[in-house]
Amino acid sequence: MSLRARPVATAITTSTPSGDDAPKTPKSQPLAPTSLAQRALSQTLTSTANLANLLPTGTLLAFQLLTPTFTNNGSCDSATRPMTLILLALLAASCFLASFIDSFKSSDGRVYYGFATPKGMWLFDYHAAAAAGPIPDFSKYRLSFIDGVHAVLSVFVFAAVALRDKNVLSCFYPMPAHETQEVLDIVPMGIGLICSLLFVVFPTTRHGIGYPVTP
Image (spheres, helix red, strand yellow):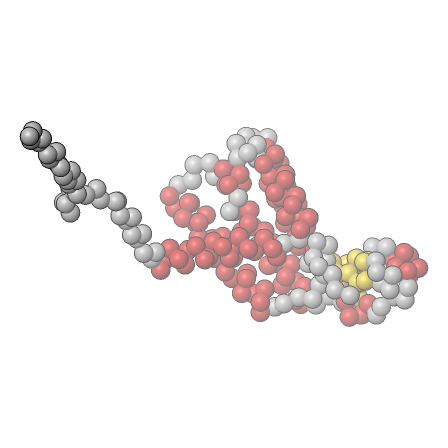
């Protein structure tokens, strides 16, 4: 009788890494808390940028389209710098005059624009408006003190928007000094805060070119 050796079962043990040897996932570093001054600065910049909504659409569009060309993308020379200054003056005058333009909607649905005067409103196309239907009482469109306030504020708002444009700043202040840079950073924000407050205190009912029209 032959004896056969029994097969010996070998147990395979797997070693699990201990707590010290286990790979550690990098923990995300907590973000530094935003200071009160940084939050205030961010909110001020946002409010200043939103001031562009208070400008006429056509004037703002012309500023965005023509400024890069006139300033040569911020690289002005002796020829382009005066032309850029003239462009900004014309656009500021456009914002000023747009505050005195009003409109009304006739019975046929067409919108007619006019310029506010001390006696009423001077229509740009009076004959077409008269042929379209009855003309409203223009005495309620006469010039008021609020119109002058909004005209001045519109010019200041446009100045604040222009001072936040990198092409305009690079054109007139390519390498500003430290004090000049501080003024360029603070003045537009101050203008934005003051003008936004005054626009709320002195609201207007004008619906000029580039503004929504109510019937």
